[in-house]
Image (cartoon, rainbow, N blue to C red):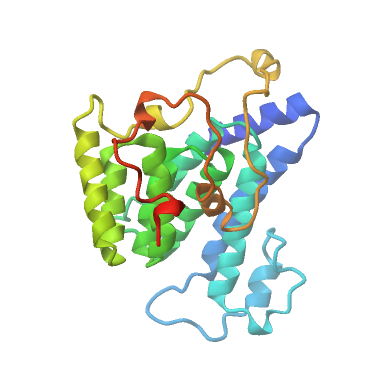
Length: 281
């Protein structure tokens, strides 16, 4: 259903803008995500003679078509495919921020372990990163996507990247779960004072009404309209950065977003945030 929603939005944008670019980008992204699984080792050993050339030649994804594969490992090939998929998802969604909700949903689905397992495998985590990062490229203030991506990167051992994303999520949402996740990462980084302050922020946030991180509070509301009304919708109030590489979402999270009057969820506690760059030594 999330994929069908993305297809519907891509088709509507193509009709509105007299192009086929959004639908083509979405198709390319979906092919790349599916084909990346062909590089995942099955069983307990990796076949040294995986015949990457044969696999690549049978794919629609173009990223390795003209590449010398002599020094390309299956892991590198998979990373290249997933990076391409992320960029294409962002291109497909363009400046339509509600598409980030569907991308976020796809990322969350990857976090559900397969039957008989207690945690998602590495391939599923890789796909979740693709969807969460694409959601953030489309909608940089999607606090849920930033929080989930931070959690995934923490699982993968990328603690500093996880910290930056969780700071971004906490600043936007002001919700206790984001602050608690941030405290965990600060603690693992040995930043005990910051971990204590993040826990303090979580306690303050928990005392506020409605202190639960819901999709409705962190992502734009979706109003279903007929195609004609959608085609006439103005785009002046939508913004997104130009899709970059695999770190595009992280680069966005490290920037201070422009804003007008902060809403109630964004109000902080009285003391100055220790996570601001000017306070860090």
